[in-house]
Each structure stands twice: as structure tokens, then as C-alpha cells.
Image (cartoon, rainbow over all chains, first blue to last red; front, side, top):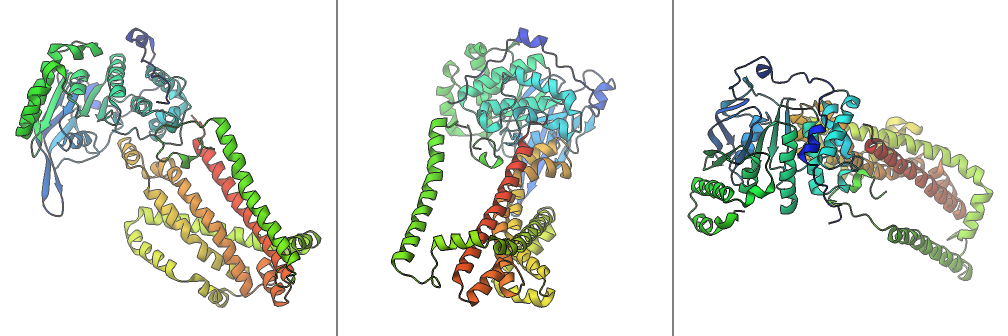
Amino acid sequence: MSWPPPKRAPPSSANMSVDLTLPLPLTNSIPAINAGAAPSAPLVSVRAVEKTYFTRQAPVQAVASASLDVARGEFVSLLGPSGCGKSTLLMMIAGLEQPTGGSILLGGAEVKKPRRDIGVIFQDATLLPWKSALDNVLFPIRILKLPVEAYRPRALELLNMVGLSGFEHKKPSELSGGMRQRVAICRSLIHDPDILLMDEPFSALDAITRDQMNVALSEILETYKKTVIFVTHSIREAAFLSDRVVVMGGRPSTIALDMTMPFPRPRRFEIEETPEFALVCRKLRLTIEEAHQNPLAVRSAASGTFAGKIE
Amino acid sequence: MATTGIGTETGAIIATPTPPKESGGANVRGIVLPLGLAAIVLVGWQLAVTLGHIPPVILPSPVSITRYIIERYDILLMHAVPTTLESAASFVLATLLGIALAIIITYSQIAREALYPNLVFFQLIPKIALAPLFIIWLGIGSQSRIAFSVFIAFFPVVIATTAGFANVDKGMLRLCRALTASEWQIFTSVRFPAALPHIFSGMKIAITLAIIGVIIGEFITAQAGLGYLIIFATARADTEISMAAIVVLCICGLLLYGLVALGESIANRFYSADNS
């Protein structure tokens, strides 16, 4: 690897001193919550959502009657194999696709189009290749027509927090895959959205970098509480990061399991070595297999769940 | 250069810095090899003409062509100016027309479906055959030469720019939509800069075609210009003047091409500048 050794994200005690207050309040944040809605009301509410694609041959139902509530500050993973509709559901929550049935409410208001109080992170970092890391982080500020200079210190803080200080003026081609995804995370946080939607953000990274990114992300979120909906097909990743894991599966796909993760926070990598973690992963794996009713998979589950070797 | 250009990004996952020593050696070779080959060809030409007693009407020697250029630079310059200016004007018009058409093709489905197949079909016409018609339509002045030159030079700009606009990372467009970006914001901050390497590669083809267009126009009708000089000298069997005019034409072409390349590096620097 030609990139410098990954700088470990600073310990959480150092994180607490980082000033992440916004230079200016964002307009257009979710109104119902700020206007004193009932504290128990979910921030994101997915109600009997369906998505059918109308192809030339026959309509294909990707998502059937999915319901899901996410409370403010919660980290919820959507887990399932490729093509189970979890990304489709996420894109509908982002307002990038429209459900063909049911409704999605954000702070009580229906999502009809993209909103500026949502930050989205995709599988690829999708950085502008001709811009520096810092300029890429500030990209949403330009698009949202906010004063760039006022957000510049915050962009530098964010880059510092993910261990990229010294790389602010590097172009994406000079950064490793993990570093670029960290820039993308900073970019999604720069305008302080209430909700982060992450669509398999680390699945293009190698396993070692991915583990580092999981630790880094959970450390970021300790400093900087966000409501996160995280799509992944990695059982371990979902279990490590989430407050709740929602398993999607079946054809058409729907929600097969909604499970609260029993691990305390802050989470460190050691929890993956506990028998409790292995049991949770086993339960998730069995649910995924059951949802797909794949008899071949049962055999591999019997041998694969032992000693926490889930992946 | 290897790390600054927009165009160098494609596909590079991790930039591997080249050791300076090695790239320095490659640079020297990249200059010495082509120059050396050119020198060998020129010396061979000179020897063939001198030792083979080839008459100057058939092939004048490089030395005599150079001598003519140095002695009669005033005449050559007088003819080089209108050719260069008309080529530059045609190139600018072809570029503007090409980019404008590409924008229409990119943003209007109807225009795309109606225009694009016709443009490609148009390209199959041997356009040089149409050059005399431009004289009929627009007269014998510079306007008909410029119009003809634009006519043959705009096509590569349209094709390259359209490809560039279409080649934008789909994920980037999705990100822009998620950020509630307007179509105009997407164009100025993503589509256009991403298409720049394509646009400039189209422009580099267009500049050579623009010069060809003007020369053909001057072949047909002109009172000045290097194309006129070549036709005039050839008719009088004055091959030396012809060759001298061609050499000057090459220099003008290099100059214009260099200006386009300079424009590209300025544009790259502008878009990759740290302006935050």
C-alpha cells in the first residue's frame, strides 16, 4: 500500500474538545421536531411502503409493505443480501425514489423529494476528482448557497476528526479508498443534517480498512450524535455499529426481523470477540437464510457460526 | 503535470508517485528521440537532393527552403496573417457552435433524437466536395472560407462534448440531487468541469480541421493567405515558395494548437484551484 499508515481517529476524550458548533443555523430543518412534537414520535417513519418497478415484461415488486420507525439519535442498519430492496428503501427515505405505495414521514412530514437536512453517503465516495479533499467537503455548502468561508473551520475540524489533517489539499487520486470514503463522511456532515443515510458506504473497501472505518464511524457518532440509517450486507458490520438491525429479505422483500443490539456504547472492536456478539450474528444469519428459504445455506450456517466467524 | 490534470484521474485508484529520477530520464528521452528522428530525416533529405541531383522544381533541399524563409519572411508573414486569423476565427466559432449543440443534445431528448443521427449522417458526406458551394452561397470573401471551415471543424467538438457531458459519474449526479442542487448548479459545478478533458480533445481536433478548412477555401478563391501562396507558386512551378509556405503553415498550426493546449492547462488550473 502506498498510502501512509492510517491515522487512528483520536480517542474519544480528544473528540469531546472538538468544537463542532455550526457557524450559522441551517434553515429548513425538520419542523415538527423543533416545533415541540411529542418526544416519543419517531424521526423517520416508514409506513407500509411498497416499491414496484414497471418493466416492459412484467411489474417487479422490489419492496412489499415495509414498516419501520427510527427514533432521533438511533443507528439502524438495514441488513440483507444484494438485491433485497434495502438500498431501494434507503433511496426512498432520501427522496431520490418514490414509493409506489405507503408513505415515508420525516418528522411528521411526508418525503416527496430530496431534503437538505439529510446527508447521504454512497458505496463510492463520489468525490469531484479535480477538487481537493477540503473543497470536496465544502461542496454541499456551495450547492446549498451557504457562506463557504464560515464553514471552512468546521470542514477542517471534520477532516481532522477522521484523521485526515495534512491531507486537506490532496486530490482524491492522491488518497486511498478508505481516506476518500472518510472525506465523503465529512462531506455528509458538513451541513449538519439531522439524518445520515449510508448506502453500503464501506463495501468497496478491503476488510482491514473496513474494520478501521467501522471503529472510526462509531467514534465520530459518539462525538456527534446523528440519526443514521445504514444499509449493509455485512452481518458483523451491522451488529457492531447499530442500535437496531432490521433484516430484509424474501421476494418481494419485506422486513423479516427488527432486533435491538444488546451491546453497550462506546463500542470497541473487542466486542466482536464476545460470545454474545457471535450469538447475535448467528440469529441475524439464520433470519436472512430463513427469509430466503435457501436449504443449501443452512449447512454453511451450522459450520460458520462457531467461534464468531460469521463473515 | 501527472498529478494536476483533470484528465489524469480516470481509473487511478491510488496515485503512485513516480520517482523524479526516472521521470526525468523519460522526459529527456521523450524530447531527444523525436527530435533525433526528425534531424535524421532532414539530413537524409538534404543528402538525397544534393547527391542525387534532384532538380529544385521536384524537391528543393531543406537548406534552400530555410534560406528562402529567412530571406522572404516579409512575404510569408503577409500571407500567414490572414490564414492564421481566419483559422482562429473559424475555430472559435466551431467550438462555440459545437458546445452549444452538445448542450442542446444533452438537455433535450427531442433534440437528441432529431439531431444526433443527422449529425452523424452529415459526417459521412465528403465535406470537401461542398467547398465550392460555399463560394456560391457566401461569395469570395473571407466569410465563405470561415463558414466552410466552421462547417468541417465543429463536428468533433459536438461529439466529444456530448460524450463528456454524458460521461459524468452517475453517483455524483445522485449526490447533487440529494443535496437539492439545481440543474444549473449541476452543470457548472459537475458536468462542465467533468467534460473539460473531452471538450479540449474535441477542440484539438477542431483546430487542425479549421486550418484545413481555411486552406481549402484559399485554394478555391483568395487574394492572400498561405493556401493562395501555395496554389500561386505551384502554378508557376516555384516549388521552393510552396514548400516555404507549407513550413510556415506548420508553424502557424503549431502555434494555434499550442494556444489550445495552454487554454486547457489554464482551465484545469482554474477548476482544480483551492478556492475554498
